Image 1 (cartoon, rainbow over the protein chains, first blue to last red):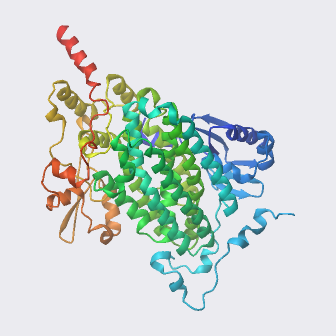
Image 2 (image 1 turned 120 degrees about the vertical axis):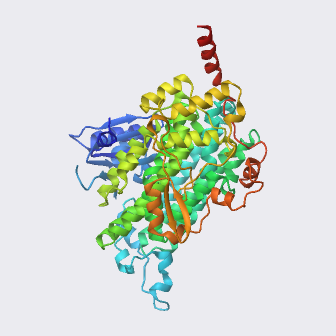
Length: 104
Length: 501
């Protein structure tokens, strides 16, 4: 495989959080499914971290995560386990959005 | 009492610019420190940080993070993870803490420069939190290894390394001095937070955490992935600055800074992260190869983010993609051979099973680096140890300060990239390292590499003993083979079998 094609293979429009493993990550996976209807949620578990991605845009709502966690949750509590993310991020009231400005 | 939603007051609360009347704008924000790029205060007021955080939120979230990291450490402290760990894994920890802990403190002062001198109020807010983050990282990564200092003297290098003239630290300081200690606030945001932290820190703090979790070192995995949650926030400081520069016709200057910082980061990671992922981490605990982690974090995630910001790929991207399969093998070969000059014990990582893995991940490994290892292995098996240690210093690059190397054996491409500047001959390990120098020669021209210092007579006596003293490597700290050459037994047995056959 040439280096160019190996790099090409990784070019995609996947966005979303990379979470530390734990109950918050599990709640985020469920919230990603609920808050992004019609989109397939890709979950890649690397043991220390979990990639949770959708195509092009992902919204995560505070209420949904709170519901899934079963305890009070403020949007900024996401940061406790948000190790990284793919795409750009936007902080909203009661939600966070991951997106790409350009589509490949 | 009703509380306003954060977004109803956030912009107002952090809009802290005013029109100075007692001093000029240049006195309030000296251009050399502010890095205004010819743009006035009001252009920077459009800076809109995408990852918003207020101080009360910060305190609560950080408290939760620390409670998690310290309680895992406390719970596992008596499980003798360190004592029972593979010696290769101990070397991973030693290399990591020494190269990184004190650099985090240095990064706090770089964040503080943005906090005081950036003309963008949003940047000042986010880097106030970023500065506190870096102090946290420095403290934790000194506190966590400290319990091991009494068991293993090399662990002391978590604190000591940054003040020494060890070649690896000269390289690390040269890079961090360039991107964060000697740049204006805006350049720090581009070079440190965007170029270095958005991409590369994921390799060392998440990729390595995946290996740590596989190796059962949950204290370390938990610590470094917790650190990365701070990084993922303050790494976002640079993005909006890039957008403002691009909108105001400064794309070329922004791009140049990204290109310089990404290349330097790559070289540093090729010597630090490459060997520990592909050679030191026990084979059965390797989650992915270094190249696969680089493709995941840098090629897929960072490259995509870079172009989404409106920047171009660095001009050398094809060279970089090719080097992903090559550079770190040479760096490992070099740091293993010169093992007395490092503060950890490099694991050779070349048993037949490990070579099969390397050949699978890097087709052609046996015909290239493998040929050099064959010679080292023969010397070790023959008990010819004098030939398995260095007598001289390697030649190092005047930009990255790391050995000038290429692919050996059947893939031979070793080449020096020289440049004469004001009567002095400089040597570089690649076209890109030389290009970085040429962008601002006066910035780099006065620096002496460790080999330049040796040739200038600054290292006495001029032998390995003198070099070790110069590098502050005390007796009992000098590196040697992590497994005390136990891995050579399998080759000895193979040779006996061949003789018998």
